[in-house]
Length: 159
Ligand code: PNS
Image (cartoon, rainbow, N blue to C red):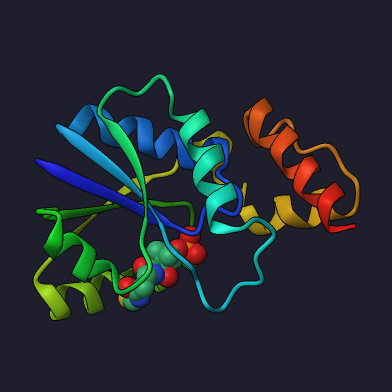
């Protein structure tokens, strides 16, 4: 069965990678879908995010990375995906994720499966990493080395 791990991944973190890796053991094929959350101010372009995810997931044979520009459920319908997999860190995540799961279920009958975040990554967020990186901090405890380098390059280009 094909599953999809959607997110804005700005940037991908060790927490995301843990969920993607676990999804890849549960499903035959996993698509990491890089969408845009209109409520968030991006640090990386969609192409930069995709490039860094590809590097981070290079060792996972049944994982592919793709951009999603419209509704996630339309992408799922067009690509034969029946399950959305999301990581849950906290009750706050749960409230937001359950709303999205419900909307996606009503729109297209697609199921969402939640995986509990690994304890060591339960307080790591892309939002926090963006802030630390923008202020010159070291984010290498939270993201793969190639991602930390990619973020630094993107920030250098912006300044
Ligand atoms: O990592 P995020 O920011 O929580 O990811 C949110 C994302 C990109 C998965 C969500 O905004 C999404 O699915 N966007 C695609 C457009 C869509 O289908 N919106 C309706 C979701 S209920």
